[in-house]
Amino acid sequence: MRFFTKHTWSEWMRRGYNTLFQPELTTCQSCRKNAAMPLQPNHLRQQAASFDARGQVLKLWLCAACIGTIPWIQAVGCKSCGRAIRCTDCERHPLHAWGLAGNRSVVRYDNHMKHWLSQYKFYGLNVYGEIIGRMMSVSYPMLFTGFMNSLGRCTSNGGRSGWSSNCMLPDIITFVPTSEQRLYERGFNQAEQLAQIMGRTWNRPVVPLLMREQETAKQSMQTRSGRERNIANVFQLRSDVGYVGHLETNKCGHVIKGMGQHGKQNDQPDGIVMLLVDDVYTTGSTLRACAREIASLQSVIRRPLYVLSYTWARA
Ligand SMILES: [Zn+2]
Ligand SMILES: [Zn+2]
Image (cartoon, rainbow, N blue to C red; front, top):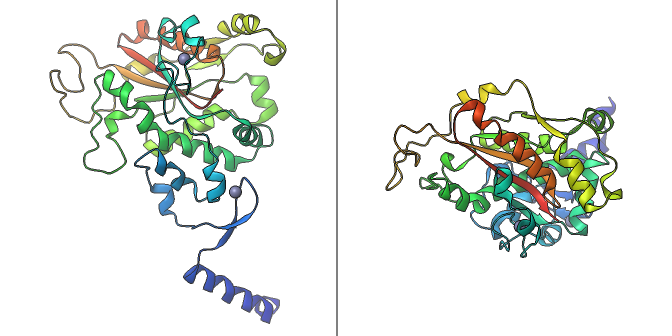
């Protein structure tokens, strides 16, 4: 009867006491120090009401000190790509010319964030995928309200604090694809996993729209212009995407002042808002190339299509 040894029993008592009367000491996923972190499932359901409150929803995995070091993008310097500072990339290559209405990112890509992403991508630590996906879903309302307003979407929150209407969410979520070879090596596509986390959180469909044709020579070894040239022709629409035109848009039923329901003119088909997800926005060449392909879908489905991209980090 080893199970009922004195040691085991006292261990059970200690755990029971800790659970009932004090927060459990848990290891922070980032610094690996033990910290008192509340293990309440409520944290998973919470939505942040403000930029400052976003860290609260990460308490399940991270200690307060590590949450405090996250370089959130609080103010947008470039309205087009969402970089924290003014950028020349968008002056050289305006996103709208590629069918991309705009981009937003959650954090600046500093060394700390690079470390998190490499733990996830190259060491397969899935907890970082959960953290990154959670950061994206909780930051979305704060980053995308302006875009959704400009597309005629209603952004009232229906009285729910810290969360916006369903209408404010994208109709469809898609992601930057990875090549078969990379998928085989790594076992997963991080952009797809992040898209799936948001799809589950918001109850929105995640659809694969693109294929990546070939593996480019290692990107970091190339010049900037060589990289741009290569990536521009790597993505292709999948052949089975016609069904997108038949998908329901995310209606809330609100009528927007001066316009019809959902902000559309009468007898105009509903526009589809597509969220294109990736992990990092570096030069934007990958997202621009993907957006151009997705925008070509518009002629097939005969409905207005708005592509917005969303990455976790902005380099
Ligand atoms: Zn920590
Ligand atoms: Zn920009």
